[in-house]
Length: 251
Image (cartoon, rainbow, N blue to C red; front, side, top):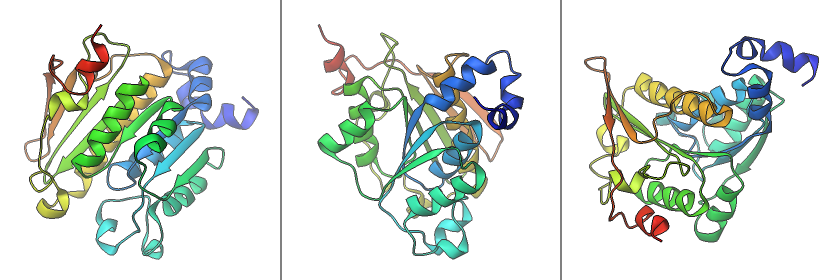
């Protein structure tokens, strides 16, 4: 690290769980963020601020006026622009030392596998189950840690898939089958700070996974009830018949 980096990240470097070694791991890391909406925006900004060296932003949508209530990497002047470009510019203003790769398309199949295979951690900030299932499957197949989040109305949740845990559940273990109509904020609404809380938790889990310190949410589901300001950490067992991770783990 150079002198500017030592100063920029000094408040993290002084932490016993991070220090210079941990900061160097962050600087060398590549994180793929799928979805630059209410969750992906705070994730991207906090990871850039924390010094993650390379962020890969994946989203095929454009900024809309209705996004600005909660998607904090975009501004009024960005309406009509691709979200990945708007987020890239916000990251550059915050930390020009973070390398950003923009993928303004829907990643699927082999292209998704190839991109995830080269990542240190993947963050799922998407808003539909088709994408969530595809990202989870790719992470299981490539053995890449995944930090998932979701938020709707006044509630949110976060979980971690850690391939290093023999009995660690994947996202498919939690939701074998689910409907987007039932869990879509476009249909049900969402309070702006709720996505910020969940996104910040996701960013924190990414930092811990990269640095290799602390206890992550792997094996648990963290549920946030903003209405009553209540957090619940629920044990999440692996589904032995999960059609994604059970096959991966079978002898």
